[in-house]
Length: 445
Image 1 (cartoon, rainbow, N blue to C red):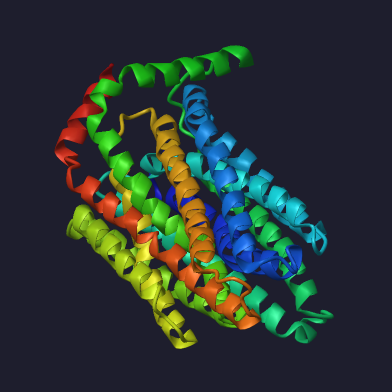
Image 2: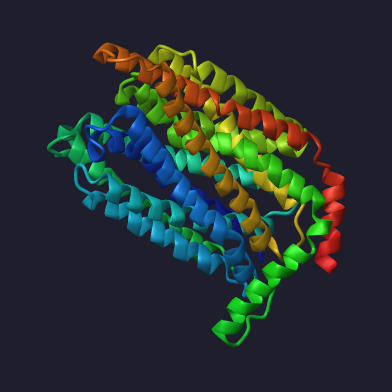
């Protein structure tokens, strides 16, 4: 594939396109709308658990399909085609959220799950194309560029949709509910339109000769996957890195998906939480680029450790905050490291995988990321429900119920810090030089 500027920008533009879903839907409006509109009247900890389980079901589906889909795509050199298919599945499901009516929390969760499948499935193949557009000396920067473009693009659309919900009359809308529903349509439109730039600018490398029959194409994909499992004894460094990544990225994804729900559970106003998300987006834009440069000039390992350390402090601080000003400061801190840890993890992994098998190995990468995302939201939901049961007195007053719900939510967020600690310990034992040697060997087998 041509590793020129046009290919790099075509690749990065997909992050600009799909980050509108990650920001405005997953992190922003869906958890708020789910709590206030689709699950109206439900207990605060129960709605948190429903949202957490919904996220986990979507992650489980993507995790199971990721390595198989990656192997099939690699075998037929179809990574770009698969990315486009899943992207437009996500676009369609995002638009469908507009149709879900008040109180229909089951339909809301189902459509949301399908949207996440589209979003996450496309990212498997998007990530796998990174080594094709960037040489090793530029890969940390290009990975950071993608995330920074995502923060900027997602943040700009999120800003517009937030203004719509805060001032619906200025946009000719009847109320904020209509504005949020319309926001889902705008996200779908943004995602669908800007993906066209990726389709036009990003060529698909032709590494393999596709079989003549589609059945052979799929069978060969499964054979390639089975072959990878047979070579597992040579993948010790990759396995160790993926185990570390599994834990710490779970903490990152849990905070992304559940932060707004958590803030509402401990009593913050939804408007304050939306402002905090906007802060995270626009701080994240330059920070992701800076982390990319750090990985280029300093050390990827040290930069990842810095980000993990920040996240441990964030989760501890999150259990104690009481004012919206603290939440804003927390949002700035998250913005400083969120894009960095994601971008550098993606580019670090690219150094450890065999050439010409990128989608297959990024399938495993995304698989473990999604399996980890099953753990975090469920852990947070279960710990919150257990804490609620432990703290619940006989015949509690309404005031006691509110207070107990808030304390239980703080217990839930505290549990996330364990994921970062375990991830950091495992990452300490990853040997990059050994991993590169293993990758070079496997590329020849």
